[in-house]
Amino acid sequence: MSTDDKNRAIAAAILPLVGGAGNIDSVAHCMTRLRLGLRDRSLVQDHALRALPSVLGVVEDDTYQIVLGPGTVARVTPAFEALVAEAASAPEPAPGAGRTAAGHSAEDLAAQGAAIKAARKECNATPFKLFLRRIANIFVPLIPALIGCGIIAGLNGLLVNLGWLPSVTPALAAIASGFMALIAVFVGFNTAKEFGGTPILGGAVAAIIVFPGVAKIDAFGQTLSPGQGGVLGALGAAVLAVYVEKWCRRWVPEALDVLVTPTLTVLVSGLATLYGLMFVAGGISTAIGDFADWLLAHAGAGAGFVLGGLFLPLVMLGLHQALIPIHTTLIEQQGHTVLLPILAMAGAGQAGAAMAVYVKLPRNGSLRRTIRSALPAGFLGVGEPLIYGVSLPLGRPFVTACVGGAFGGGFVGLFNMLGAEVGSTAIGPSGWALFPLLDGDKGLGETIAVYAGGLLVGYVVGFVATYFWGFNRELLEEFDVDTEAGSSSGASGVVASGAPEPSEPSEPAKV
Image 1 (cartoon, rainbow, N blue to C red):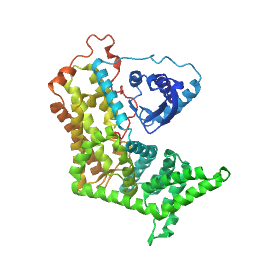
Image 2: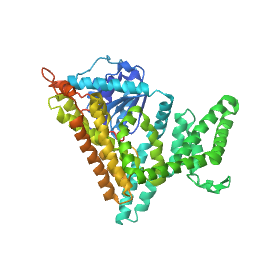
Image 3: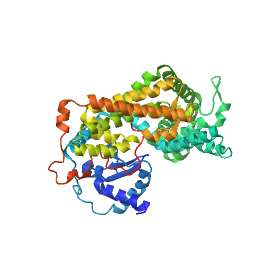
Image 4: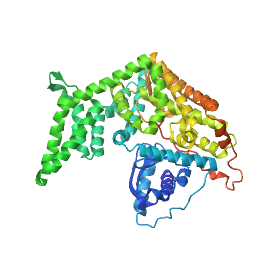
């Protein structure tokens, strides 16, 4: 089967399980997820969808999100859109068709995980968290470029250090740096789009920040510098442009709108950016970088312990989205973010906890199959299948997974405090997938060794804490049973987490 046929087959398998073409309002994708706007959520066949070999998990938020993995989702989405267009006028299959059943205990955990996700979604519908979701929607589309440029930057640094290909490294440096030099423009474009303005006007105002000519402007006795304020300045400038544009749309006569509205939008928000926002955002950006450096230099182990231990709960509450512009600011300022490698330790704790659950429940075939299927993705950074299908519904293993993440984060933070800084040149991947993006001030070998040591600590502590303290007698009696006894279908291979044997790359940067 060709690659195109394979992608079309994946799309064709998904479409009827989400209610058919008639149930699709919108189709989009981020780095790892197919994001669908649905007319009727009840038409979705969750269990059958999770049972598809290409589906690593599902997440329900403002859109219905199907985790397919990086690379795969970018190829499946066009095929899915084509099928929706072709089938828009065709009869839809019955909603109940194609459902399958999972092993009893794994299915119970899946139901509990789905209930937790639904409760989290309801809890997240607050103005503050909706605002954070908007911030995430601005920065998430930039992640593929950040990853690609970050890996090229790492390769270029390696070649420079080795003294290889001196005629090629300047070209690689230009390729790696071009996007970061203009990232403010992309942030402005996405911000205006997210807040309901004209995207190109948001990009035009944000471009002022990186224009070299701002160095000639003397504002309040200070000379501006290109890039001052960075992504935070671009974010603020584009939001202001949206409000100016909306005001103009209300008051400018239609006959003059095409001339007056864009002119006033760029002029008013541009002047405010030059004589206000660039100073304010520049001060905030500098403070973020200085605080991160101070924190890890003076309290690295403690800070790493807290950050690594709390990241899984932050993800559950949706508060991790507030870290995206902080990561981006640090990458823009320093070339890497020192926070992501520490936060990635939460995934190591989660993987260690899952391995302990596997050992502690030798008779529960359905749950062990779930873990076998989801664990490879977990090593590469996809945390949802293990979280919602295993540790969180069980309760105590989720807490012990956080303990593993805390010790792994403390390990990486300790070495940061000792001078062996570990950072990531891009946001997105975590787990083993973060290795190509690692950067530090002590050489690549030592940086990789520290990060690998943190992962190992997270795995071991997560396993030990879960094995000895993750189960009480009642939990063992309930779940250490033969779930396939008397089953005619052998549990049909469906996993509670929505992560059957993954043959695709996994979703990064969730835990």
